[in-house]
Length: 215
Image (tube, rainbow, N blue to C red; front, side, top):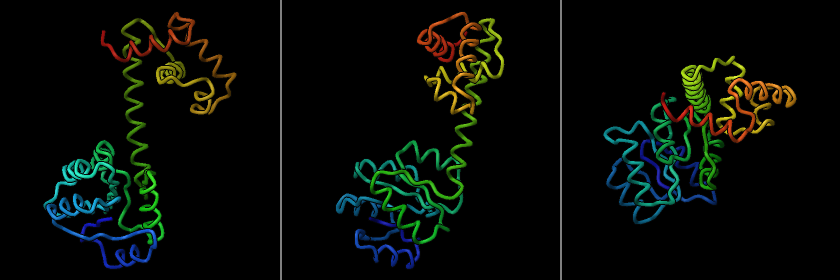
């Protein structure tokens, strides 16, 4: 593993105590980072996102090209939404805050090595809020495009049609909306009648056409 040099000697000592971990080096120099990554092919790199004069995302992309199996952890001072979301797009495997305790720090490295994703502190909430905003925007788009077709739906019917568009089955819809499957079957039936289609596969196809085309 490689760490950016910003990290304290305390964290270095914590890692070096672990029998299944070996610290290959620390650096603040991007070229040295690339050189070490190419020569020694570390499994994990812990990246301090506050290092000056280094573009975190561009460096991440370059590292992934140098060692395609590499796992990258961002250690962040605070939850930076744009950086987290862009990091996820570029294949970053873990996001931890720099106030993480030593045991969770070690567990995060180990879990990332074993191909798990790690999100600590407020980061999961940040991502969930972002997903909810996207879903809300998608639902509003669906509602508008149904209106363009002369179809007016209730909020619950919109929920149902949106989840059908996402190809949820009745059980998954029931869990998502915190309702019984019997209630969901009734709502699904009403939604079918509202759009004038009575076959599930055709409803799904219809909803995808609605979402993917403008009228």
